[in-house]
Length: 489
Image 1 (cartoon, rainbow, N blue to C red):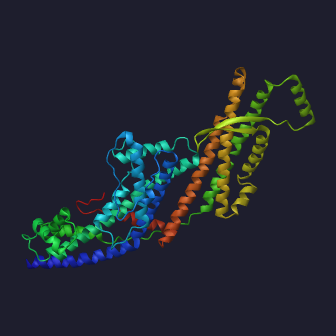
Image 2 (image 1 turned 180 degrees about the horizontal axis):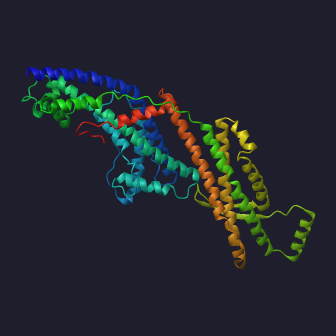
Image 3 (image 1 turned 120 degrees about the vertical axis):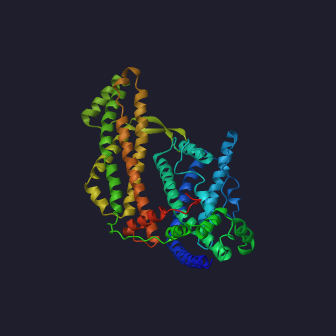
């Protein structure tokens, strides 16, 4: 008995020291990371939530701003009647947004405030929708529903909105994994801290015959008022302190909660963010060949278009203009395309020869971006200037794609049926044009993501060139095993 009591006292002292070190480490290193991951999580969800509202896949919650939250609560995830699908999704997703906002902006994310119950609530919010396995085939009611409206949200949107949806879903998946790794480590700490309190306030000095579930539960209200009785953790205390394999179990616990050590890695070269933007500029510059081919085909289509409707007098006037090198008469075509943001058809008047001249100027300029004078000038600009320039050209290419697609359809439908086989389509060129601005947009997002990551590291006091070491620490802590029966996986 004396030997058991002595060993128990020694273990309690060691456990106190190791937990104190782990608490200090987690407060300094992990809590900042957790806050940042949760902010990114909420920001990404808020972007999706606003798109769902804009696309009218859910409705605005009229009571959203009046909701008062005092403690985190997991929104309803039970099944609902299909007739009330939109209503239920609107209420639940609005509540989810409010809960995440409260968590990020008002909740006390500190080691002295959190406990097992609050960690469980945070985990419940992070996992409310399974962003890692978001699929209409998912068995979770809310995950399945959100997967379906996420697919619907991509229909008929511009490439920028599509990129935002894709980026938000990707970040939700990544931040879920990162946040869960930190929460798992926090859970391990609070589980062992709870067991330490059981030892200090109840079982210290007890014999094996006295330390039973019933006796410990009976003493809980007076010894630890307000603390819940976690049967699983109390059983762990009994096994660790009174069973034959107790020493091995205690050693395993101490090994699990010790502060991880990180091996310093070689410093890597800093990322050249400007080069990412310049790559985007060059991708846009590559669109010059597609536009050149489009002009060539449109010239031939325009000739066919004019030939079937000209009178003899008009043909004579055209011949005279060609001989005298006079400017061609204005040719105005009314084309139609779908406004992706409103989902309605829009008619626009296109001055064919004015558009053609504009495209020729644009082609010459785009060609100069391929290591030409314009590229050299851009290289000397600041990152903010370059990203503004890149965004401007992406928007221009998107607009050209829209107008040229409509003009392509116009030529195919307005020429008499007997001449339509002579009209040259531009689908391959339009596809290449679209690929250029989509790729450029991806590079713009890559720039923003890497820039944001660097800023996060700086806010955490980490030199961005030491990010590999930080990643190693994250991997080491996320991979630590939890004691038997851990409730976070």
